[in-house]
Each structure stands twice: as structure tokens, then as C-alpha cells.
Length: 148
Length: 293
Image 1 (cartoon, rainbow over the protein chains, first blue to last red):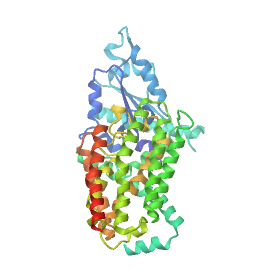
Image 2 (image 1 turned 135 degrees about the horizontal axis):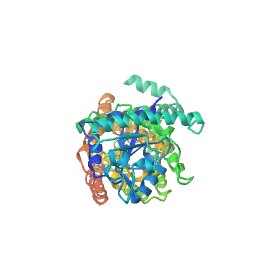
Image 3 (image 1 turned 180 degrees about the vertical axis):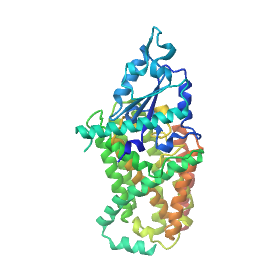
Image 4 (image 1 turned 90 degrees about the horizontal axis):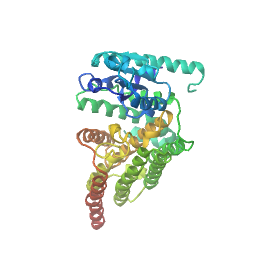
């Protein structure tokens, strides 16, 4: 059926991003790129979201928030790390307060590198995330803990 | 169109109710899809497919069911049931007043759903929803009163087959109803309690704590509500069914256009302007009608 890839709702969280990737993410929703073509909308609410988009590396302060957001999202859910800071920590990885990329605290499914990640790359990552979302949904149904 | 009336008349009341319960979500979902597509076009975007609302709801049905407490989904279920009930009453040609009160009861359950969780965002949305209900309810009742004054009946079936155009007798009431219709359809500038666009400000009002199937129920209830409200617009032009259908659609497009062009009002302005409009357009129309008799 593939309802998840037709209607993935995004939740965006800025862990410690410099705002570069955030602006590119917003740009991919604007008329030029228009992510809503694929049914993607920004929700701003973890309980409605299917895809958690994290920009920036995770530090001691943002760790709790990221974990909270992830825990509040209903299954199936996918994490996308947007930007090189979110994928690995980049030049900030050795800072005393930085834990590294998002994968240090959450199971990341898609990495979208780039400084800042281009809207085309972000859209590519989102489509990839949709496929993983579908696979997770199928796996849930197969395990028998999915919906009837 | 007369054939459609003939088909409706040949059905018994339970059959008419069942037909509404089955067909209305299809129409409401497509209307919601047209809304999203048209909104996107107005913003210079391509927009999602017209069937997107159905995809959304089917997806939400497959999501994990997370509830904060076990009462949370119950008021929402009642919200859906009473919305369907009021729509079914309306489209089976029953009493208009009963439809309106049943719809108000549905709205009350929606507010209770917002209050049944502990999130402050949800409470804020529920409080705003109460203010909105107080803002629009007088005008909805005035509409029924005006239609009674013209046709001498509260029965939707009788009103729909009244020979004279209601709109010529009730222009003020229609204008007032248009104003509060924007509130009922949850469009800007009145989408204070639950908005698709206000996510970053108050998260999403009443829907904050609802996820998965619960949120899907809210969406489906809104589809029914849209069809019912456009049915009420239809009544004003019911002397010519084709004109009435076109006007109902035109009103919906107007609501989308307003939605795209206005920023959100504060609740004080929403409340004051709705009551002012009700008093100036609605009440004066009713008074003139009663003087003419």
C-alpha cells in the first residue's frame, strides 16, 4: 500500500546547527523545491511526525531534547541527520562539550552530508527516508506488533 | 437534479443517513485535497496530490497508537460520532435546529478531548476553541431562525424545496454565515485553536497530544463537518440546485482564498468581530424580516 512514503510528516530539530542547514531545509519547502509535492509537511510536533530531521552536532545540552523528541514519536519512525555536523560532528567533534554526530545518541537511518547540505541533497535524503519508513512499517506488520 | 431529489425521496431515513455516512468522507476528503492543492498554487508551489488527505489518514491509521491517558481518544470518538450524526440528520432532511445543537455537542466533545490531557498547548487550544464556539454559535442559530421566518419550517427537507430563493430574504444572514464559516472551517484569520500553519507557535492546539489513529479521527470528523457546512450554504440557494452546488463550491474557494491572504487574528478581535457581524448583518436581517410580515 505504501501510505508512509506518500505522507511522511517531518519534525525538524536544530541541535547546535549554525542555521545554515536549517535555512536549506526550509528552502526545500519553498516554491522552488516544494517538498509538499511528496506529501511532506513540517509538523513541529513529535506526536504527529514520521521523520525526525536533526541539524547540527549533538552537545550535552541538546542530547536530552533529541532523545525526548525521538521517544515521543510513534512508530514507525526514521531519523535523518542533515549536514556534516549532524553526520559526524565535523570540525566541532573534538570540542569539550560536543558529543559528535546524531548517531552518538539516536539510531540514524539517513545521512545527508554537506556544509550546508543542498536542498537537492536534502530531498534525496527524504525520499530515501521514505523507503526506510516503508520497510520499518512492513517489518512491524511482519512482527505482529503493527496495526491489524 | 430533480432525479437526485427523486432518489433521495425514495430512500427511507436510515438509508439516507447511511448514504451520508458513506459518501460524505469521500467528498470531504477530496475537498480537503483541493484545498491543499489550491493553497499551494496560490503560494506558487506545485502542491500535493488531490488525494493527499486520504493518504494522510490511511498513514495515521497505521501509526502506533500512543495515548496519554485512556480517556483521551473517547471524547474524540464522540466528536466524530456526533458530527456524523448531525450531518446525517441534515442530509436526511430532518430538523435544522437539532442538527445545529448536535453539531454544537460534537464541538463540546472536541474541546473536552483537548482538556483531557495535561499539555498546556492542548489546554490553550481548547480554551480558544471555546471562545470560537461562543463567537460563531449565535450566527448559526440565527441562520435557522431566519430560514424558519421565510419558509415557516425548521425541517431541512421543507426548506430545501421552498419555491422562493432564500438568499433574497436573508442576504444579511448569509453574509453573517459566510463570516463565521471561516471560523467553522478552521481557516485563517480564525484558525486559533487548531491550525495546519501554526505549528511553531502553539504547536497544534487541541491536536497536540493526539497521534496516529486519534488524529485520523479528527481529520475524518473535519471532512464530515465541511460537507455539512457546505450543505448549509446550499440551503440559501436551494431554489436552483445547480446554482446552489456552484455557490457552495464558490464559498469554499472563497474561504481558501481568505485563508491564504490573512494573518491570524487575536481571540479578542475574532470574538468581537464575529459578534459585531452577527449583530449588524444577522440580527438586523431578522428584525427587518419580522417587520415585513
